[in-house]
Image (cartoon, rainbow, N blue to C red; front, side, top):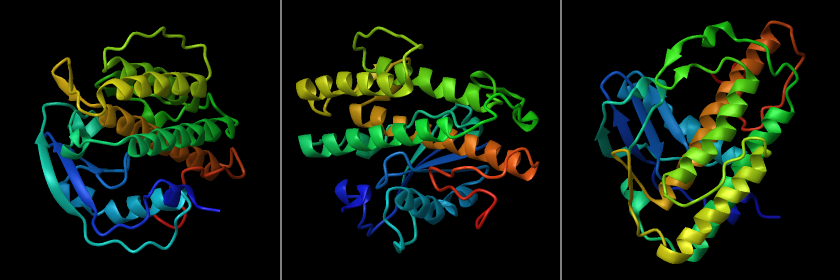
Length: 259
């Protein structure tokens, strides 16, 4: 049986290219060959140093282990006034604008759905959903930081509508729907837009540029960055003796055999 990585043609990596965004206070890089994979840090060197670890975790999550990677290379840099240190971002990768055929688009849609299922499974596997991580209490660019598993999950579920809205397509928002119902509805709308324009259309919304590929990439990135936040909370609950263990669905291995 093929791993999801092989099925999506995400196995052979002759390069690890990074699109880096910065406001000089923080650095957020996206691994171009692995949609949604990211590195983050207060310095560029620190962020880039995490690339191989993130790529390995990403492909292991997709069922492809023991992959050897070359040294990462920054191929694009974007200067921004956003709160990059809080993971706010706007970069339109050159790769986001690249034409896609139907097979490529379909594989990316499948990956976005696989990511959503993983995030949903992570949430469902948790018990202390309303336990407050006091270290997460702080102000961010979007208001108070999400400090419980439940708050993080609800944020990810709602943000799916935000990403869909970047295309200008009409839709009805229902936050009471399950996460995957919303995900599938969004993917259906995006697939309809792809049938009309392919990946050729650039949407300019609130001074930020989007393509369908960027929207899909951001779905996966958002699952990963908040999946990591939930996993950190679970690891803290384990260390405090509140839970015996937890499921590391995305295989981040936080606090175990890597920092």
